[in-house]
Length: 455
Image (cartoon, rainbow, N blue to C red):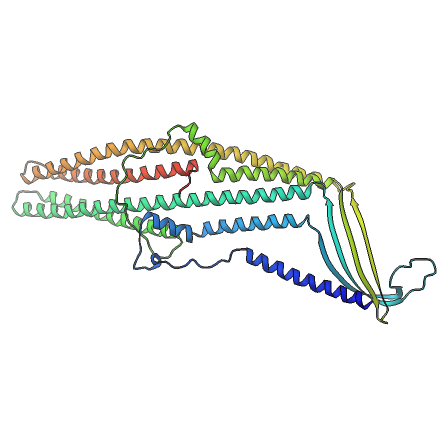
């Protein structure tokens, strides 16, 4: 009997060691959250970034992208949980009971068999269970978990592409904002020079004082606009810093070559929509979740089906007098639900409703993708046309200002004409800068809408 006791304790020790190793394996399998390594771009004295370096930093540091990666890890863990429900289990069970009356340690095996009795009973068992048939619940839940993991992976891809779009668009907006500020600074300098010219003409009694006042008003308005645009630039830099996941204010470096007219690889909406429905991460994730929900419906239906499992146990009974004996059993257990108060039907109805809602949301997403692609194509066409018009307007505004300044210096023009020409030039420069930014953003938005992957 001592051999039996030793065997039980040996099995218990093995189980404890196994459990410890499994737990350690799980901890090693999951990624460890650590701070992103510092790079030279984290130095506040080196905050100038190209678009490529900005994207590299964002993909390494952005918290939302990191959270999506953890969502994938959690989904993998749920797959492991689903797989574990279909595997055999081995457990140790121990206990102590005190009885008012003496009890047999083990049941009699034949009439009149003498036995050991005691009111304090100690027991220890090794219990084995193996599910053989679960009515389809195990298969459905495992398939659902694997599909949800695939959905999270698709969602991670979409989150990455959205981050690339947000960083790229903010980067181009910052570059355009700096051009607008440079135009305003030039306009302020030109207006200050014009103010001195008016002051000289006023001193020579060749200009009216109202011309000086009008010039000062325009100069004050330009300075006001300059401060406003500088504040907008600072705000956009903070937005870019948040997207990059850094604490310094990045300074974008413009590309060496300015792109010309932006032309998509395909301008056929039907072709692009078909491509998007095959590649967009959010659509693939939604479709995969729909398939997973179908499996959840099947898992709910399994609640009304029988289950079959194999079980076995072996253990020891002992009393406080030192008497002890071993006991064991094995068998096959079948459970058939007869009446559950409508619980299974309610679960099935719930999962079917969720499935129907998922189908409608998938249809909504498909319509949204169609709309995004069509709008992006319209924006690209519009921005290309506006670029040509803005370039022509800029050339004409510059020539108009030169003529009006010459006329005013010869006392053959009015100050209002000069100020209007100056304002028109500034507006043309601003329009030209911003329409180029709009063109780049529209192209990036089309890539995002179609699910085209950025390398």
